[in-house]
Image (tube, rainbow over all chains, first blue to last red; front, side, top):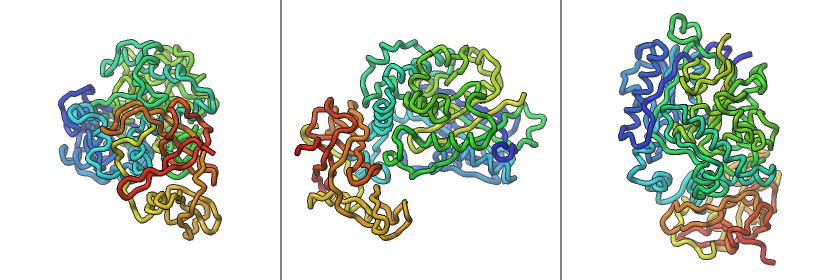
Amino acid sequence: MTFVEDRAVISGVGQSAIGRKLGRTGWDLGVEAALNAIADAGLSPDDIDGVASYPGPVGAEGGFVGATTHDIRNALGLKSSWYTSGVETAGQIGTLLDACAMVASGRATHVLAFRSVWESTAQAAMGRAKAITGHMTRASGHTAWRVPFGAASAANWIGMYAQRYMHEHGLTREQMGNVSLNARRNAALNPNAIFTAPITIEDYLAARMISWPFGLLDCDVPADGATAIIISRREATAGLRRPPLTIESAGSAMYERHSWDQRHDLTTMAAHDVAHAMWAGTSLTAVDVDFATLYDGFSYLTLQWIDAFGFAEHGKAGVFMEDLDRFSKDGDFPINTHGGQLSGGRLHGYGFVHEACVQLWGDAGDRQITKDVEVAAVGVGGGPEAGCMLLRREG
Amino acid sequence: MTSPPAFRLLPEVTPETQAFWTGGESGELRIHRCRSCRRWFHPPMPACFHCRSREVGPEVASGRATVAAYTVNQHPWFDGFPPPYVVAIVELDDEPGVRLTTNIVDCAVEDVEAGLPVEVVFEHRDDVWLPLFRPVTA
């Protein structure tokens, strides 16, 4: 009982340079990540016959759309049997999961899946607030229900969920701050991370408030960088560089309306739907997971993934996070060993897939997890956006 | 917030949302409701997501609600809309689970809490009447 009958595997990963104000475009970063991932798999661009990306050509400003599927296809002259992009999908990795099904069904053999952002460079001149509302003269779509009330940012939308969890379950800011402290400590071992200077809980509590209960250190950092993952048909990986990683299970479910405020239980998110679906597709359970990479666009989202995956009992994610030593590379349950997006930079979802793969292959260098690791849980997204995977290294 | 901000980015008004955004002209909070199963729902859609009836339309809700969750925004996202201000998700008394994202007004930001009973008050701008909520006064 495995995802897409075990026919699709991860055969390679790659990233571009990652940083602040690199002065490079999202296309350029996307091409670099794609070529690195293709080479990592031991393939050539001519072997790539499928392309998938997030979010595609949506009308967003400020470097959110670093490169679309066609941008990278065109830049590299890729001949494609299948290609896609999309934003109405299971978090930032929805089209990557679709790629697995396409590979399994024979529509493609080796798919390049990627996400590129250049928000740091693109927003340097315009400012973050302008990047969010752009040149809108009226708020439309789901933002029509939020932006007129000054709720311009996901910090506002997700901050309300965090407040509700505090109200119902007694989560404290100190517990939530441990997500930020964990990310920062782990980032110190990642040469590509953006913020590596140690922080204390006092620093966390003293940081400028953005939108209660989120201070500045609860929010991730806009970055320039691209990440690419190669999805291959299992029988096409013989002789390649890497032992293929099995996608044991995955979740792309959504059991309710797509909404930022109508979900029946405000102490859960779409993460809970995809986690439920993921566990339904495997005989493994939460106790079989060796480490996790959990989305942290805001600190609270990591707690949501802990809650959703069942690493802690519902409502107890803050208590679970209290013993920080558990979550380092030397701990019994490492989380976000690369520093997450809070300290590693907002690579927008794909960075968590990349880190899980690198750790499973034993290639993480100074930040390699000390214990032997075979199973990783990857949770990506927040609010009504969520996708997840359970990755496994064979023997 | 005690006085209206100088600027709000207003919502686009669509055929589905016009009743909601203009009800305040008559002092009415208009929320979509199913004429078959009588459930309220939001945002407005051309079908009831509970029973799939297409016999739906705006009706006048009580205007009473309870704060389900809130955030005190401290960051200046817009010129002319200075922090601090409270953004809240309020749950309508008319039906549990039917919620609006809004501002809590006529109230110190530190006095807002989950469970606070609130009532609608409208702020008119251009062609829309924004439903805001204040602590219940009566």
